[in-house]
Length: 373
Ligand SMILES: *Cc1c(COP(=O)(O)O)cnc(C)c1O
Image (cartoon, rainbow, N blue to C red; front, top):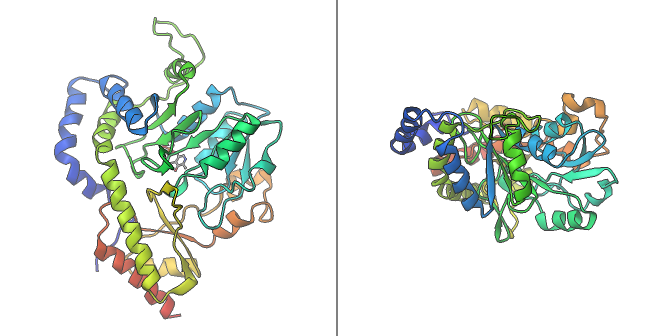
C-alpha cells in the first residue's frame, strides 16, 4: 500500500524541469535577483491572464493584503469586514495596519462569506470589505459589489486560493479596487519560495505602492515616503511565468478530480454522512482544496492516516476562535455556522497529478470506515 499525499510538488517539478531549469539559470547568469526583467515579464503576463491593467509583485500574500489596506489609508479606528472562515492571514493583515477585523459568518453549503449577513455588520467605521475566494471558489461578488457600491466601501478580494477561478464572465481578482494573490508553493499557482501580487485597475495608486514596497524610493536616489520591503524576487518570477502557462490545464485536472470524487461519493453507500463541496453554476471552482463535511470527522481522519491517506483541516479553528483572536471574545452564538464547521470539515488530497486510482482508494477507504461503524 503506497502513501497518498496531500499534494505532490516533487512530481510536478519533474514534469516542468526542462522548461524551468534554463529559466532559473538565466536569472542567475543575469544576476536579476530582486526586481528586474523576469519580475516585469511575470507582472505583465499575470495582468493579461486576469484581464486587469496592473499587477505588482510583492513578497507574499499576507503583505499583499496589508499593503492594499495601507494604500487605501486604512488604520486605527477603522473596521474591515472579513469572513470568519478563512486563513488567518486575511485578518492578520487587518490587525497589522491597526484596524479591527469584523467577522461575518459563512454559509454552510459553500463555506463562503454569507452575503445575507453582510449588511448587518456595516457601520460608519467600515473602511473595507475583504471577501475571500475560499478553497478556489469565488465569493458572491455580485451581492458584495452591490452593497459596497451602495455604501461606498472599497472591496479587496483575497484571491490567494483562486488563481484562474471565474465569477460569471470575469476572473476572480478583477472585481475589487484591489485583489491580492499568494504564490506560496502549495497554491494553485505556486512559486519555489514565498511570493505574492497586488492587482488593481486604479492607476493612481500603482506608483505609490511600487514605491512603498521598495523603501519609499522615488527613483532618483531619494525616499519620497516611509515605505517597507516587500519585493518579488527574480527566480520566483521566472518560476511563476513558466507555471502560469500550465495553470489552466492544472485547474482543469483539479476540476476533473473533484468531479470524480463527487461521482464516487454519490454512488457509494456513505449516504449523508459525507457532504461533498457545492459548486455554484455561475462560477468556476478551481479546487485549491477539496473540502467535505464528515460525521465523526476526527475518527475518520485517524482511519485515513492509518491507511496512509493524507488529509487536512482548513481550518482547525475559524479565525475568531483561534487563540490569537481570543481577546475579541467571539462566541459560537455570534458565528454559528463557522463554529459548527470547525468540527466537520475535512480536506481530502487534491492536486492536478492525483490519479483516478488514488481517488477511488480515498473514497473506498471512507466508505469502509462508515460501513464498519
Ligand atoms: C495563503 C493565503 C494567504 C497568505 O498568503 P502568504 O503568501 O502565505 O502570506 C492569505 N489569504 C488566504 C485565503 C490564503 O490562503
